[in-house]
Length: 255
Image 1 (cartoon, rainbow, N blue to C red):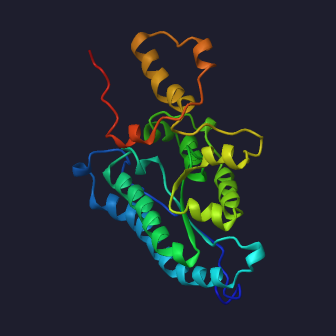
Image 2: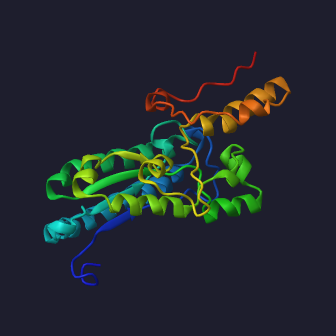
Image 3: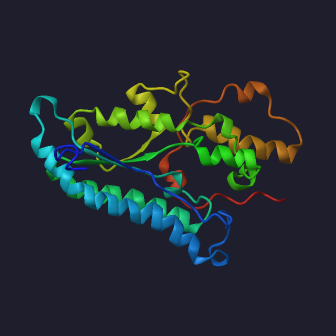
């Protein structure tokens, strides 16, 4: 890359991730094979570290060569998920995502004096090719817990978030270097949308949490639908991060 670009590297995006194809993602860690850990964190965590390790010297050199009048800090972007904050799917998955979050934070600490920024992006539910294929195959509901993929974000939405961050000035970007950024929340702050002009709610917004988790549980227990006037008037209130990091989700009340 350095040879192709004359020694310049402005943006690196680490998004590779996979899970074992022949093993269910949801499950107790003692019942899952070591392959779950090795595959999730070999591709997701280790490859992110390896990529950033190789890219950092080139990005430091890029920061040194930039014209002061048009200076934008080179950006290392790591794609993670809400599994870094709250229990999601299984132990190996969550530990890997939390590791990516901490890695970007610590890399940002070391790179700051060289003018290179880092960031962690949390997309919401994303209509990736793999997820859309699971819908076709009939495996999506079990794997996702019956989440509605039709309301998800496009991969392009995350791409727009990266472009918006990469265009921030040096002071603005370095001030937030190492932070976790939610794509849907960045959209409101930095003024970008999906191709159809919409902005999906953040996964930590009541506008997402209530329809996808709370209302279905209420309807299942009561046998009655939640009134439309409630569903259509949900505030876009962000639940504090401390709520997600306080532990696993509560068990359903079986009384």
